[in-house]
Image (cartoon, rainbow, N blue to C red; front, side, top):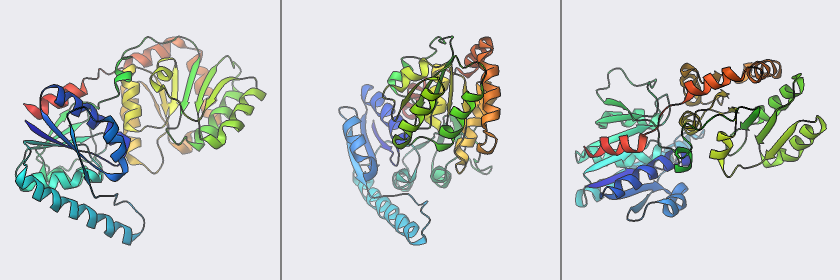
Length: 348
């Protein structure tokens, strides 16, 4: 079977697509991966052996400038027509799109040639690109059991598959809790200023400071945070980048971080309690954090409510009650068979 996988934009869209591509190649299917220039090198170096790659001309439509938005739409339209011509000659049997602006051209071309098309939504709230292209697809596969924003009039079939995660995360699925007082603070690849401001101030207010902190921050904040923790006799390891995030999560008794889809699903796959502070301008992160909170795995806290006083009281309560942390970890744990489920759905 010839299967076209459309991805691009960010690693959050690319890595799940590559995981599914590898599984489909392993099952003997002919796979082609289309992506935009922003992630071309990422796809080129990480794609499975045997999978072809096609670069498309596309960029995000979310720019503030009206002129840039028009230019982005023009590029997507040109790519859509180019893929329409390509599909006329080399028509795939299936198209699988992993969201974002870079998936739109392939979905449009597949619609014109009546190729069965599948969307994957990584967040707990439908993204703009997926919401736009849903009119042309057969099936919407989701990372979370419920997804907000799906139009009521939509006739698309919704299937909960989960979100593919990296193999090193899967290798630690359901790992036993350390049972100590280890706190992991991570704001993603760029760090998060509010975590850098609030977390150290909260730990200073705690009476029991027998806590070890692994804190990932922006490069420019490393020296300042290291000095702060040392001056206040708090055991900490401050880094600008954590190379082995899987081990960092496994070694943590509690995680404080943002709530991007991949972060939340990695916590669910390993099974770790967390305090999630969604990026204020991102409704997707708020939906992801809310979904995690409903499991009982932790707290979803708005930035305005994420204060040092609140956090100090919450950390004291959690670390003074390890059995509560253990129960939260159990509730957070969600089996992850996303790669197999998506591959099964696409090929059946």
